[in-house]
Length: 223
Image 1: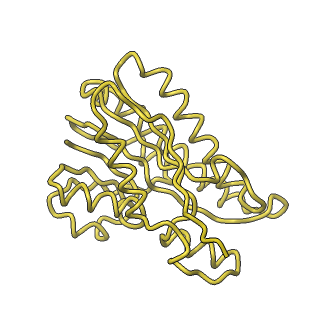
Image 2: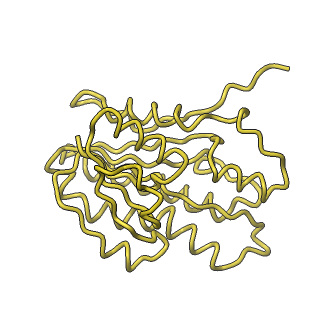
């Protein structure tokens, strides 16, 4: 199988890319800094800043292509009363607009393969908390994109899944804790490999079956 993965330089995207590489699948990896993907020597690497809409519009991928996994994401916490416009627009660009543009461009290849589009969303795409307005808005929008795409493409055999991980032990989560002024303890959160395994399960479903949505949460120990 041949997969396109965004956000493969860290976190969930990297854990998934490593698992796909290790089992011998072909990879197309999109990232802002190609040097961070040097340990994927057999992958096709496309260097692109997903916050740059014009650059995303210019991305070209030759077929075949079985799956597209949108895993890239950025976050900047701020209350609505004081958010910086550039932070708001960047989160919408990376988390929502780039997946929409890339999906539009790659749909012909996905239709040929009767492939899968998988959106790595967030629990913030289900419930918005204080100071999460920009990020949650982008993720609520991403869910809407997935829902519309699923309805539009069902007759073409394209499967669409949204994965909603709760807090996951990634560099992004470490940044969130810093912004929240909280101590970061990776052991409290979901390992990115666990989310990657969930994604693999979705990608490997037999033809004619699909999981439209799946939520991944940590088990909170009883005190």
